[in-house]
Amino acid sequence: MDANLTADDLDWLRKLKAAADAKRDPPSIPMNIAAKLGAFGLARPTGPGLFTITSKGLEALLDQDMRDAEDR
Image (cartoon, rainbow, N blue to C red; front, side, top):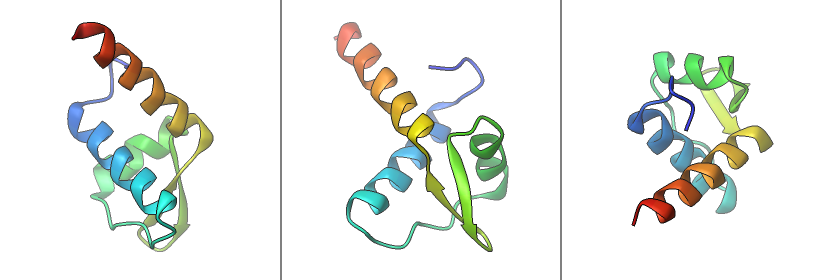
């Protein structure tokens, strides 16, 4: 995990992924988290206050899931 990402950031990234997987509208996320995810290229805006996960965001989640699996 990027040292600058918190567990909360990753949780919101997972919510964006779940919405994309289910073809639902993305949830409204706090602007501070949206700004951070956007700055890292993990999410991009789709409209006023709405963001979607990027391929880089999907890779970040996969990397984190693999690290979590190694820790078990």
